[in-house]
Image: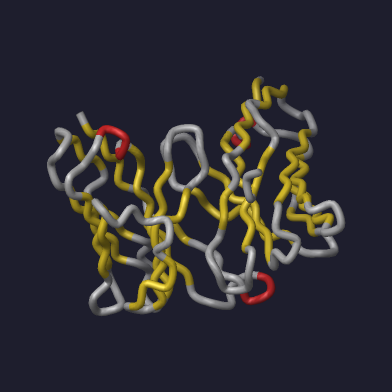
Length: 110
Length: 118
């Protein structure tokens, strides 16, 4: 089993749609969690951290379920500019290396 | 503030040739990472430095890959000899402790070095 697994993509949605990505992790002692965004042929960039109580940043909502060992990312009112690959990232131990999922590709169509 | 700088951006070599990549992290970031990213996959850690010390190189194929960060600032990653399967994007990232939740590292990546081995 991979340490971090994401929904296989791609997700093709129309503008204005709501889309959700899920990610599971294997190490129950994992300390911190993030979502990164990667545009085509670009480097990954931090989208948002994921906090235990859940957190929201504009149209983006991240949630953590420690009991089931998964995190999610919800995008509301999708824009064309949201088209990218979304990477789930887990830090198994505090201050240690970050482990990336394989990414879920999102394509938002007009 | 300058970001993480990598060079070269693109490199095409024949198999069995050597290749080297260079990375200059964000000023003041004491943690430096080299990741490898294959098409359609997430980045995979090759090596992590805390200042000049390699604290995690368990995923670095040491028979052909080497890395150094002599003065705890910039770093080089070398492959010798390169194989066809080494074709990938080599990403360098840096971080400063305490930026994220629980004191975890938040990474800033460079643009990457895309290697093609023929």
